[in-house]
Amino acid sequence: GLVFQTWEDPSHKDENTGCCGDNDPIDVCEIGSKVCSRGEVIKVKVLGTLALIDEGETDWKVIAINVEDPEAASYNDIEDVRRMKPGYLEATVDWFRRYKVPDGKPENQFAFNGEFKGKDFALDVIKGTHEHWKALITKKTDGGEINCTNLTVSDSPFCCSQDCAKATVDAAPPCKAASPIPPEVDKWFYYQKN
Image 1 (cartoon, rainbow, N blue to C red):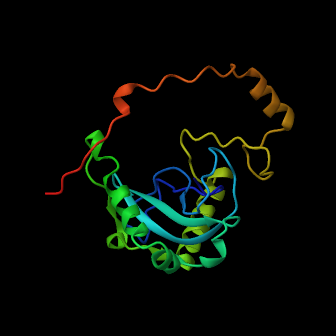
Image 2 (image 1 turned 135 degrees about the vertical axis):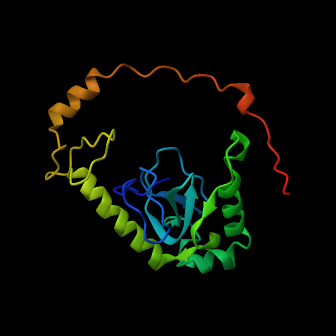
């Protein structure tokens, strides 16, 4: 998932990672026991973050739990994840390190040697990327090809009326049936350590 109203600015070098942002919102890895539906909006409790360096760009991964999860009260910081889900954080780093290897890309790198940072650090990252989003949505920074049209940020030059938004939706072509999944993507890959 993602944290709304955040943006990893590709023109801003992150002081913690030394790399610029990857031009999208902050990602969230929700660790709860319930599998959420695609597109579902949930309220989460932030527990920590991992600083992935993906092809030279900062790509923060916030670790969080759904506040409605039966175990949410037991989790308050990243160390609770380490204690209650042994091996989970290590497996998460391993997956993010290697997930692009089957596509012929190199392993990803991490700031802080792949160590997770706690809740307070994660909240500071979210606040900082929210400031970048505010600069984007108010046109104080150049977002390039990003469409910033919105209905709710009244001081944004991209704010449009409900009538304008309705006209845009009405003019859009109808959705088509989903394309079939090619069989060559539905296979297992194995990674051999050297």
